[in-house]
Length: 448
Image 1: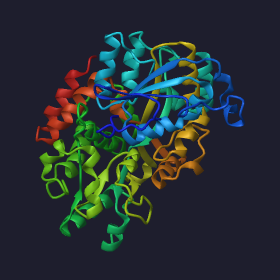
Image 2: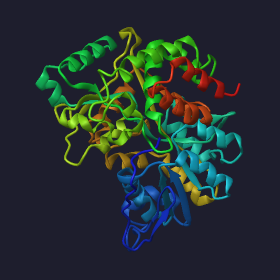
Image 3: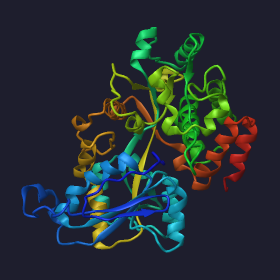
Image 4: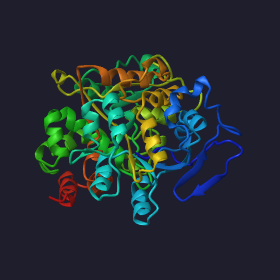
């Protein structure tokens, strides 16, 4: 999933910054002017990867502050092993990774936000299946459900990286408290709350679908969350696997339920304009009107915690916090829709395998978690490292046995649908296209 425009990269002064189309690239290595002493205690966790050397290129959609945190998270590995990492983050990852592969310029490693896109490259023969060492670490670190998303024809091609909790509704605890609003526990309560806020003269929802070449994906999150709550996990799976058509009546019902919020002029789009403003409001800016009371709620993933302006307190009694989009039927348990990235490789040089192995360890997961605004489904993740309260909340909900978790549906669908017609269809729909026409358009794009 694309995140945060206007790339900003911080690197050691001795390294060169190379600007590339659609993103930013840099080499991380040496920890500044010199690497760490490989025999020091701090390098003990990395001994197995020493004496390999080389440079590994990584391409992903992670940019800006998140990219800086990512670089710091693996810096100790780089310092202690001497393996340099050349990283490029792009807002056009989904389109440009295919261009790179077709042009013979594939990265060594890519972080795929969509398992459907990972599958495309696996089935085309471009990706390298996980070697035994990587597979062993993956099986130790993640549940079978997570690994299934990156397993095709019995071969594991990717390992999970970060996890995103994509059912969060962001809100201001201060605004709620001052107005006597309570966090809703059911969908009916959510609608009652929205009506009350609207009656009080505030738009209850702010929404943003714009995301460069990926415009529309926030709309798919809305539909996926509603399908899971409207019909349960079995129908959700049938829909994602195309066992029922995209224009099935059950999916139409979910669109109709989402319509009561997203295309309701009394509900949206606080701080930006009318319903049509949603298509041109960036998802990065979409939730910011919460801070000045122009809207009350914003459906967006857990990664949005990094988008709030510096100085914003993210806490249960702070400036902003989040709650899980409530169930329609309380007997369903706790429906959660999430996402994440998967590490896939286009080459199998020793240094590439070494980086794949490291990224599959609890050592990396905890190193990245310590940088903030991130969490993982890795079994070895230390929850005490999650300083952002919403990260801790998301990780705790994911571990709750009552949670009914499903991966982002559009990320599981074939890329031409999930990252293509579904995205475009949501833009057409929010701009006024009939629901049936939208569903037929997406269904007709899905190869049988």
